[in-house]
Image (cartoon, rainbow, N blue to C red; front, side):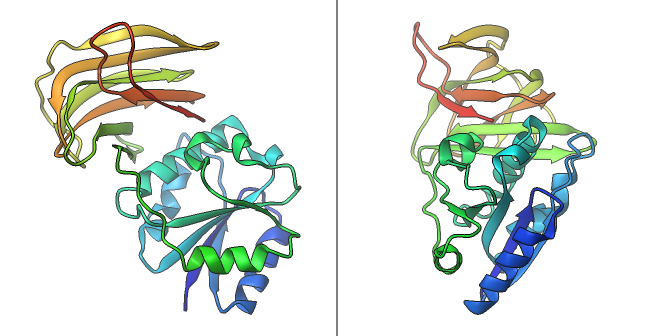
Length: 254
């Protein structure tokens, strides 16, 4: 039997109970938790292993537009990125409790995730489809997060298989970059040599200003650029380091 995990953003049981009941009608097991808005102690880490578990077929996030405070948006973004290396195929469904959510209002990493109203007649079908459908992983780049209350939050970026980057750039809006490094993929480097490191670059994209760090180290599918971020950013961008005036970067809103 397929199992779904419910993340209820508000501590009211109506949506969670509704989802659980409908899931049972479609032959689905359901478990979950209420979101704890505690970025300082990284409360979101408490459910990371459950979402990494291959027994979980669908991650359901239930809440309203009012629930999406900056700290909650960032915590959900970190949780999402922390599981994507192990579960790139995990399906996700947003359940909207007030019929005001749309994909453009969600944190950027969830831009392609379907949204369904909690009172929609399609909710059961969406749950069943999500639990039985795998997501096709993005193959254009690598982006993940390593986090621990001891060593903080580190973003990891790098090219996909078969590609090389002549350097790397990571920039944040709102938060602050405190350290960076280069090393083997999927593990924070203990020691590294940085080629032409740059700190404190000021970038502007539209009306948004970013502060970026960069290195000139060549990266491939087995090597990554790691950046430690503090605070609560409102967005970030990343990509190969620019050789000219224009950079080809990915922009993620939070």
